[in-house]
Length: 202
Length: 202
DNA sequence: GTCTATACTCTGATAGAC
DNA sequence: GTCTATCAGAGTATAGAC
Image (cartoon, rainbow over all chains, first blue to last red; front, side):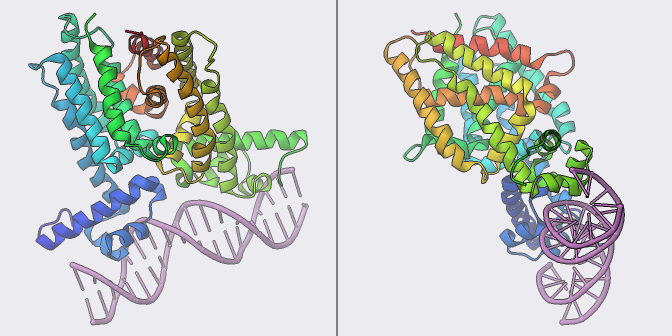
């Protein structure tokens, strides 16, 4: 039961996780039911519990896999690179993540919104350490006058907020924009302008 | 049952709504239970259902009251005013709303995040109309060269994202910042700088 | 108006046949 | 490995006494 081994087990585990992502991201942990997940996965409820010991375990597995992918774009911020293009590339990667993996974004948002009991440790540990590391890089660039001086941590917060907003508040964004819009294309252009003006050294 | 009349009924209704806001914002609709709400309110569970016909009705009442307060800062954007200070004041009011009413922000976020079945109509109607109205004001100011040219709707989205982030992702913000920080004070200074640079006519 | 007791449904998890 | 049947607990809502 701990982890899949054969090819069939591998495949079924993935099917379950895919279905669980769909349901958890749409309804939150408590709002999701094993019945729904089983239906989306095309398996019976007891069969789910053959592959995972509990509902909680499925959720935990999703969060663990998610976190790593989530930190990746920030990890890619290269201290040796050219400051403004580096930050711009980070913004772009983060927006692509929202566009291509909106369910993962909402899963994470659901969790943090509710105080993140199942993810708080990782946020206080891994995430915080990474932010401090990259904030130091940004601060150095500011000291060198290569980007404008700003609070580097809040600069990172702003990138998270502005990019994740399009996945997490998708319903609102589309409702307000109305038909005939490509939210992510427009957001890309908007954020490009925003950070170009914000970061330009004075 | 429709609405309270006597002073006692008024008071109990408010106690219930206050408790419900606390519990719904922390756990979402499905995650919240009448037992929890009853305990926080200091009333018995059947007594809750004497004042409101159902759990759903309590939630609906909260959302309806919330929406109005939520639109207020944007309503205050004055077309006759001075463009940059007007937008700055809007950002400030919105951030104050996050600081002073984080539970309301999270209630709203929980709802939109899950596709907003109970609030979609209001977003597509009232909210969208207001945004279109104020976007027209911003566009006029841009045409007159009084603020920089940007997509006005995404400019409004950016204000929502950046201010609500501090309420909705409070746990993450505090975990990353660590001890000895005042997130809202820092955010206020950061956003002041951000929008000053962004809006300055070139 | 408020409480205790309870009906009924939903849901996570298990037993056991195949 | 997968299914049917089922248990136990939680949760919303109601009945009825006071």
